[in-house]
Length: 140
Image (cartoon, rainbow, N blue to C red; front, side):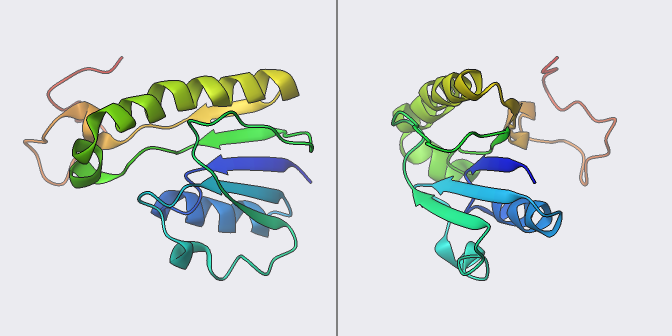
């Protein structure tokens, strides 16, 4: 059993990832400040003894007594409405939050997955977008 931290764990992707990783027998720490995530997304997980919700902003230093094996960093205000409302906060979450996660990963020798949204590709000219579509920018 792995001990896994999912930041942004109360969001759409994070809550589904939590369910999947729990079904595989892992222990999940779900960190979310509920800025755009919702406890409604994780309500069916709150009674699971292998799931712990932590209401914290990723911009604050992260300290865990438990050793963390893996980290999935999904924390960032979702959708243009939310991330454009406070661009400074969004930038802090993406930069300072990522630094906090990297420090925790280093401390625990944990593997980390850093996620991004499709917004990095710009407004799509093709709907729906196939995997071969690079958007208006090439993030590589």
